[in-house]
Length: 313
Image (cartoon, helix red, strand yellow):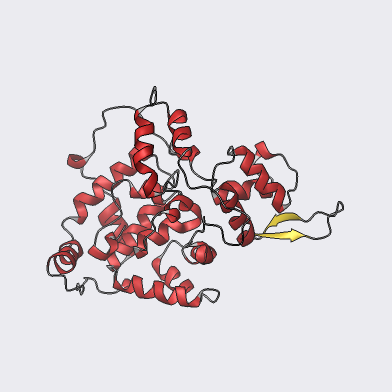
């Protein structure tokens, strides 16, 4: 989603999708324009499955043969063609390239203002080189777009899909007339100078109050969307086919998930619990293992001699 680089915002439903990704990942992607593809899209929660390219023709044929369009049936059919898991091997294929910096993303992009995010990146020690590269990316983006996108995602977290689309419709109408959008499109896509002159040119010159007033208040009635059905949702209906989110895994570890009970889990028990819950979906063991490694600590003095897990806040 490279919109901040052209003075725009993450549209086409981006506010709904990005605001619901694991622990501020969506904010990071929206602001920096960093790209994910393939297996990363699967682990991030954009995609429900990861199917190698060479299997797509036979997957297409299989889908054409299905007796109906029931999504459980479709899901099962796609699962027949996903890349096999090699979890437990010294070098398994299902590696998430963002895993080494996810905790840094979570901590640095949790704030409600760009100034706080910039400060956090400047103070980042665990992934200093990544932070430096991220600051360099942000410095190229439209300051107005950065603040618009950040406000957009914070609002979208608590809005339904239709409300997000309505909010985006209003933003499109207003940002099309913005200096930075015209400048960004012309310099980056037409002239290809890669050197747009943003106005205002720096983050301190962009007032958050002005951003809220200009772009998020006083809706324009003429651009209100009309929907042709009553379908709406706060959680995407197909998200049940994705890998478990970090929030879901945390709820089980902390005992907040009523379906998991209040029993403490060891690492192996937790991985097996989710593997069973997700019918041994390929990628579940890998993702749960990664989340455990990054976010939990072992309780070494367990009475039964098994190290159970606690969430490391």
